Image 1 (tube, protein in one colour):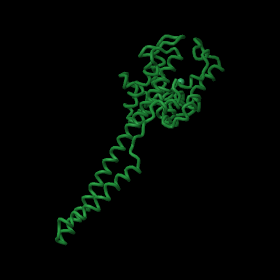
Image 2: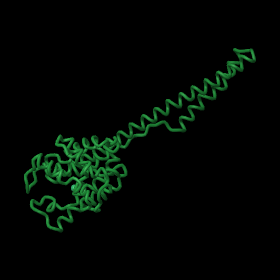
Image 3: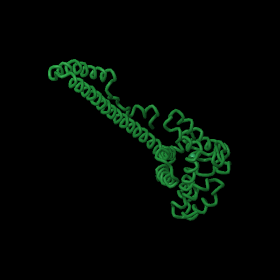
Image 4: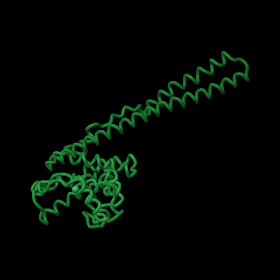
Length: 276
Ligand SMILES: [Fe+2]
């Protein structure tokens, strides 16, 4: 498993941007001789006072334009390096998050790639619901990490083939809070963390851990919840076989406005071609 600290060590962007002091020194070394020698050169070449004034004006404007061009090129170079560093940092985060998701699937003996499946479905659903690129990225991270808190749930509870007793349910429900606390130190994942904490809330307010209802539930969590319920029912479990596509569609329709956000259910069923 990769620690949050490991993320920053994995590919710390190397800052090779020219130092401001060096830039100022080069600017001075180029400007001072230009000012000193260009005036002498003009005086040697132009003897008419009016023409000399005109040439000095041209020289001054030329200097300003060249300096502006150099500043522009430097800024562009710095901006490119900054974008490259950000892309490297994002790639490092993605690699760490996907590693976590694979580790969680292994812990639950989930060989079918639950995290990958729900992430792909959530992305498609998010696009259908008009999420922007940043929201889609947050949703993707939230989907990959939604059950990260289960690393704090005992194997005996996590892998129990039969129904859980009350204490075991309490422990299992706590994975939402544990996951949220685990990711609190990563500001880049703040929005994704809303999925981790709130993906078991219910539209009617009977969910956990906070008993939020309706639109008080973060939207990314409402979107993800539909996908999570769908994938859970479509998958085999130790205590039951996977439901058929029609059975799951009927269940989603029944939970529309009870467990799940009606607008999200409609969009999801349309996406799957089942209609609302
Ligand atoms: Fe969960």
